Length: 284
Image 1 (cartoon, rainbow, N blue to C red):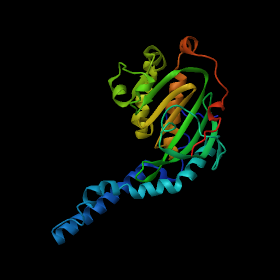
Image 2: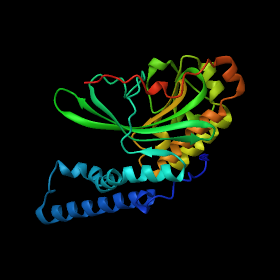
Image 3: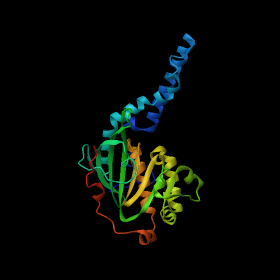
C-alpha cells in the first residue's frame, strides 16, 4: 500500500535528471548561453541574429529540459510504480473514459490513445494513472497534445465538483473560501456550494496550500474533478516521480478530508470500480 501523504513522496528517488534543481538549472544555463550568444551577435553586427528569435529566447531555454522529460518519462513512471507497489504497463488495454469534461469532450480531438497505465492504492483508495494523447485538428494544422490522468476510487458517488486551474462554469458557480491564499491558488466550482464547503474543510484547505507551496505546478496546475465515485486529476505535468507523488498526495488529502456527514448527506451507491473506463469510445 502506498503511503504518499502531504510530505515527500516515496517515489521521489528517481533519476537525478528528474530532480527539479537539475532541470531548472539546465533551463537557466541554456537561457544564459542563448542570451550571451544573442548579445555577442548584436555587439558584433549591430543587430540581433533575428528579431523573431530574440523574444522567443526564454522559451527556447526550456527545450533541453523538455527533451529530457520526454525521453525519460516512461522510465520515471515505471520507477515510481515499482517503488510504490503499483502495477505498470507501458501499453495498457484500457478504453478511453467517456467523462463529460475536457480533454475528453474536445470536439476537434482525434485518435485518443492511452499509454503507460498503472494501478495500485493510495491510502485506502484504489488508484489509477494513465498518459493520454490525442491529435487536435484545427483545420489549419494537426498538433499533438497530452495529459496525465490520475484517479482515486471513492467509497460512494458524490455531487460534481471541480477544483484547480479551471473556468469550467458548467460544473456550477464559483465557491469562495475564507482562505485568500487558497482562493488565489485554486478555483472551485460546484452547483452545491454547501457540498464544496463540506468537502474542503479548513484543515484540507491548509494542507492543500502547503502542498502547492511544496510541489508548485504539479499541484497548482492540476484540475481535480469529483465525478461520481471517482476523484480525477488531469494535468500537463505529472511526468516526474516527484510530481506524480505530489498529485496523488493532494488527491489523498481531498479524499481523506471528506467528513462522515458529507458521505451520509450527499453520497449515493458507488458504481463498479472500472466502469468509468468503459464502454470504449468510438473516436475517428
